[in-house]
Image (tube, rainbow, N blue to C red; front, top):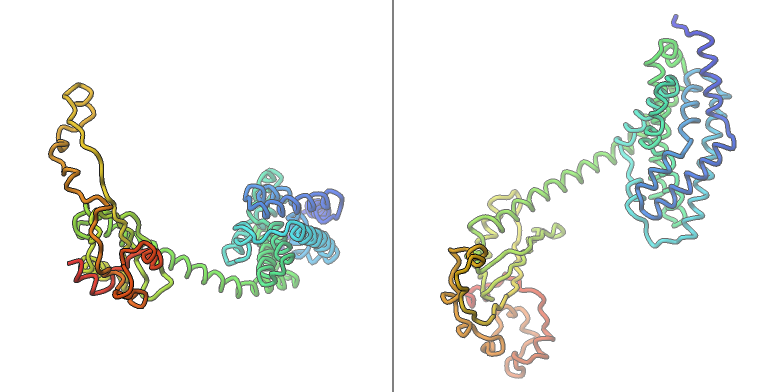
Amino acid sequence: MASIEPSKLDRWQRSFENDAELDEVFIVLSIGSGLIATLGLLADSSAVVIGAMVVAPWIMPLRAAAFAVLLGDIPLLTRSLRTLMVGVFATTALSVLLGKLVLLPQFGTEVAIRTEPNLLDLGIALVAGGLATYAKLRSDAVSSLAGTAIAVALVPPVCVMGLLLSHSKWEMALKAGLLFATNLLGILTGGLVLMAFKDPYFRQQLKRSQLGAANFALTGLLLIPLTTSFINLLSRAKKVNTRDLVEQTIEKFLTRETLTFGDKKRVEVERVDIGWNTNPPIVRVIVRVADPDLPTFKQVSAVQEEINKRQDIRFRLVVQRNAVDVAGPEEKPNIQTPISKQLIDSNTQPADDAKPVEDMRPFQQAPQFKQLPFLDKMNPLINENKHDLNSISELEAINAPELLLDSQTADKNAD
């Protein structure tokens, strides 16, 4: 039967009893870390929250609890859990109070990310608990304790729970509490496994420990909600990744390939957005055009067809045209000088060969429209016998913010 030196076991026993002690140091550090973490969460500052993790002393009574569970030491386990619960209740009350005093209308991402625990959090807690116990058993590894405290993050979930309780957000507060329970049981389980792995004596003790079996059972119960949350996380990540790939493909097709809306010099794509909240999803393209009649309905339809050929689902293409009127005075060509030769490309089109400004129609001389084809669907607002469509007040009343190129009338008029 495996055994351990009595002197070494007694030394560890005394050391873990010190970790489980509820003293002034533990209370001060717990209150301080709770204040730092709560204020950091209210300020939505990850750096401040990390600082609170370093200050928090909660991992010490937890690893003492793991040692007590392994050896079946009920008094030590009771003291360890009592010390931890004092810190938890004090921190929760402090966070509720600060939440009610500050009364933020909503919390930032630092709070939100601690309301969706999953299997990854349990894995982190298991590793952190093992490392914290290893640092206790090996004095030369004590420097890793601060990093372990940062990784496992015991105090922030409790502070998040308190802040959410102060705003009566019970469901989200319960999820933050689930994260704390995950970290707590993960540390206990990780510590038990590490000690059993490190020494044959602890391995024998773990096999006979009823408290250890109860700890593993409670940890196993956590797998149910954590697995569900993890599956949801994978589903969301897969959806986001698929959407990103589709958006990149469509944007590349519209901005870089030859077959877009015709002449790129006359139709320039400025922005591509995809709205996924409709079926079919809408690809909204904002283009800058020199000719307000471009792109035509046929061109938009052709591009939409090409997009749908390349995707697994069908999309609807909607184009918003921003017409650009170019105007400017004439200027004589520069005389050939060293500076002009250096700055001006020799293949640049001479200014005399450019289209004269006189050939362009000034905006104020543009012919008045007798019919507005893109407003065919708004006939109830237009009465040709009674209203003048060139009236500024009538056009302001119509107030069409964008042109949706989806009517056959627009196609015929544009052609």
